[in-house]
Length: 399
Image (cartoon, rainbow, N blue to C red; front, top):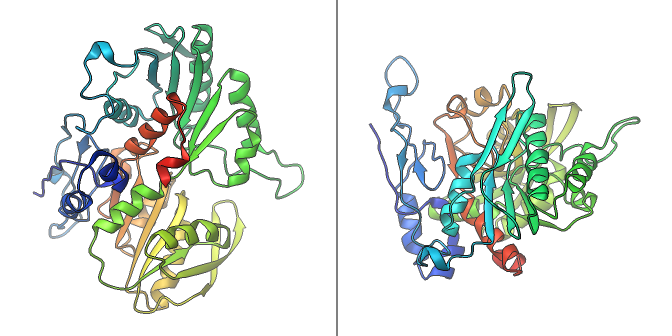
């Protein structure tokens, strides 16, 4: 059985090396010991799936290592401070959508995750009660609005209302994955723009600020009437790719024309790699058809970059085209792993060398497969929370 432990997550990012004096080469060396295929869930807990396949079937489920809790990272913001001197006005609460991510964020900041009671009545109604005082505090609510989208979104509204009625000084909602973001315009007549509706509801519920990661389109940020801090998962993925020893020439590929700006920015930070574009014509919701390739991928390692993978139809069709055009290997990178059926079957079919995502969405056991690598974005979100709490510049994190 392959078992692994790491002193630091592959997603700690070179930012942490510069900020805390750690050697970037040391971080990369630690990350390079974790070889695909595997599934790494979070910075504080590690799960490794054995690479080899047993005769007559896939990977042996019994070969998966147990979840191993690890101590908070030593580079935590407030780790070295005595408890009585820590900032008691910073409060972090988590909904039920992704509590492990919230725990990692709190561990990085050196604070305890806020005590909150969330339960559902027999008829499905949601009950929320804060079990500690937040009067005069800066409250940060961590809740991605992933599946079940409406449940998680309503839960977030109720958490906001509970904090507002408990006299919190400010309420910042931290949404690693923002559901309904794709419905950001009217593509046809008589359609709803639910991205704007969700933004309005968050404002009316009582939130003062929003922290969101990799929105589907930048113009949706203008739908909010309150301050929005837009952060990116690119540094986490770029740092991981830098730790890998890929000897072949790289080419960054956008799976559709709409993602060219994202892919170009990614390629620039990846040693100014060349860019290719897959021309795609969408036939309907969650259905796509690849037409042809713009650019050269022959004999190169292709890095496909997108903000999310839903049913994986777009990215797998694009990967098949890249293979036909002579690409040596194809890597898929995205921030949000929505992975709606039949995404798992498509991604695990062997066309991808590795599928690299972040833990903005908590993935259950049945959505893990050997080619999947999940990087933790907790440190990046925690740095953003710290800068917002201290009235610092969020953009300085990415410089």
